[in-house]
Length: 243
Image (cartoon, rainbow, N blue to C red; front, side, top):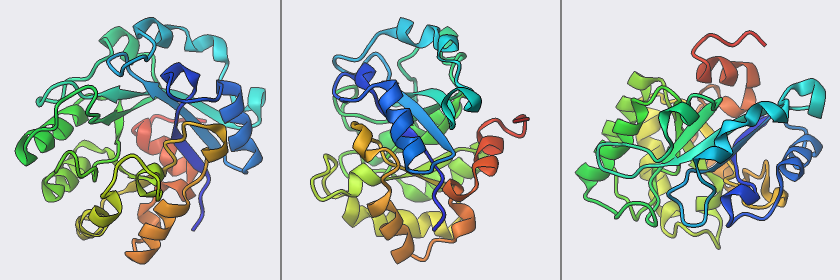
């Protein structure tokens, strides 16, 4: 399985992660990736930096010529209510290349299946939200059929989160939910993205467990965007990517 990008990685700006921006970029380049994305947590995550962190990405000069790899600056937005509102002010969201939107129990109480599903679908309506993070987390039960259909409607990628499937991962039970989740996505031919959710540079680009799950389920490679960086860029920029 071709794997050339990882856009859900965290730096010390997420506080509970332990590597710098440059360390994550270097790790991605050394592993032969074409694209790395930085998606530090929005401000409602305990300890995370506040809105102003996201205002000055222009100084990073995230061009391939500067780092030898394409760098995208995004955020992992925390969903904060069951309508799908997220925790970063609009003026700062506009500065992002992309956003992952996720449910985290430090930021919102786990709801019913209906509430959680409505929250994720609501977040998709934000035009900067390109990825729904770890939707198979058992703490937040979700109607996968509704979620898959909504993802196709809103042109949003659903994530296969490597961190969720690691034996010591923090989202226990995700491995057991993977069969149901991926079967529904496969039924609806939903494009997926593998993400490391790395909180240390050593894990950047590590999709071992995610790839094993996708292979086990016989997921069509043409629906996994990690193998085609140009396709991924066109996807997140909705056809407006020019290189």
